[in-house]
Length: 398
Image 1 (spheres, rainbow, N blue to C red):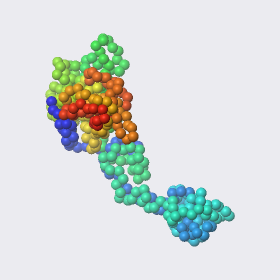
Image 2: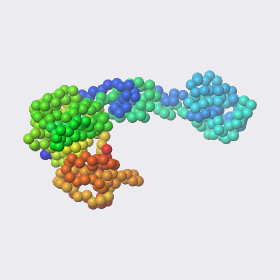
Image 3: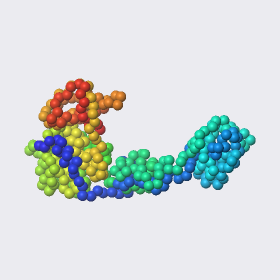
Image 4: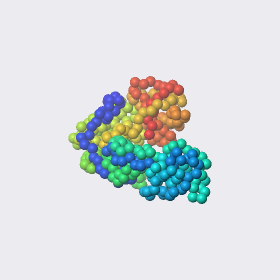
């Protein structure tokens, strides 16, 4: 078994031969990663524009105290009138500032009387005038390649009339759970040794949440022929195949053998890690197989730390999860000599994260309920010792 840090380095150094891209209609691109820089093709605004409802004037005329209303300038109109000495043009939010004007006096600052405005309160020169390029300038990179598209990016691209941005394709991730004891959702239990499958559903949720396209292939029995057929078919129609179960050293653990027999290059098999020490990662060209343990907690943790970086590789970006610092509220005694991830409660107080273990159960790597609540994963390297209350630790926040 290799050191956990070595396994992470292997994943980080992976390079793909090619990345798939496509154009998507703007709002359909939500959650995708940009495969191009978004560059402004014009200034915004292109001309001086009113930021409020009011009256466009020459600042030097404000001292007169009374100005004639020469015209009205609604938003969207290309006003032809020019502001001259002693006059004002009523101008609305978003309207172009008329030629000759340099200042906008808000409606609240004047009284209208007999076709004129009486200026009750002065404003400085240039007040409420949006200058050319205030929002952005022509040639400016507004959104960088590699940015995951959210609502703000969609709004900016819409203002640039970008109908279909170029994005990286989300990788298709096929999910296979192995185990003759597993029951699908809704399937009737026929003997007490059977258990309900949860791995394939939590993996589907993780993949959806963190940028992949899940392909649910269900549960298969613990016989080598079925596993061989299912994994081969999954590889043919997906970018990443993720399996649960069958990677340990039992008589019916065939996944690890099937992966090799399908001609895949094994990047690593076995990591000094708790939970998930039997995790296996392999590749064949630009296709990958991740063999996760069968216990629910183990498969969840190893999916977060190994599957998510692979999904990110296909979109030329970084894994969405990183280690953060938190303060222990109670002592933590390490349980083994491997690197370990332990579910903990996390709170944020005055900008600092705090963690404790209240209500978290100790036992096997099957206790998925430890992930419920406001939970993070406390990480200790295999070189770290036990920790005292008040010490800083690393946590994986998801």
